[in-house]
Amino acid sequence: MKGLGLPRRGRALLAGGVLIATVLTGCGGGGPTAGQEAASSGPALGAVTTAPDGVQEVTLQTQDDYVFTPDAFTVAPGPVRLTVVNVAEQTTHNFRFTPDDGPAPIGAEIPLLTPGETRTIEFTATATGDYGFECSFHTQLQQFGTMTVSG
Ligand SMILES: [Cu+2]
Image (tube, rainbow, N blue to C red; front, top):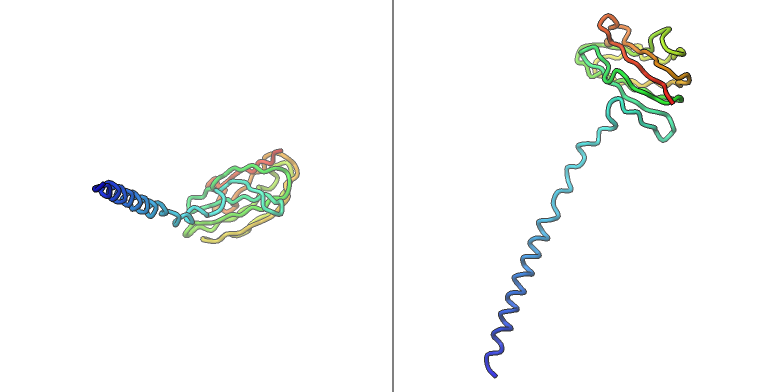
């Protein structure tokens, strides 16, 4: 019989249209994989993490406003690696554990931290309790903080 070719041809065109639509959708879907590097600036200030060598690590910041950010953190007994970042534009600070405060003396200190400078000290905290720390230049301005050893 004649005329059977027409419906077939219609289907083929339809199938072709679906295929094109699928390809276009596939092209649009592969997009946003770039721009994921912005958020990688290390752990948050004051967050205590444990380094691969087992030492607890914590970072504090100080600015032109005579405060430590944060001014309190807690570690477990054991070795600690403490970093202080001075993001001030004009104020020099320092860091020491307040003499005769806390359950045991910790002698590690940062005697001078100029604007823009970052320094790291290591010490071992054994006795549990609260250890006051300070910037000895600015105790008049209440630049104090507390490290708690607990665990
Ligand atoms: Cu200071």
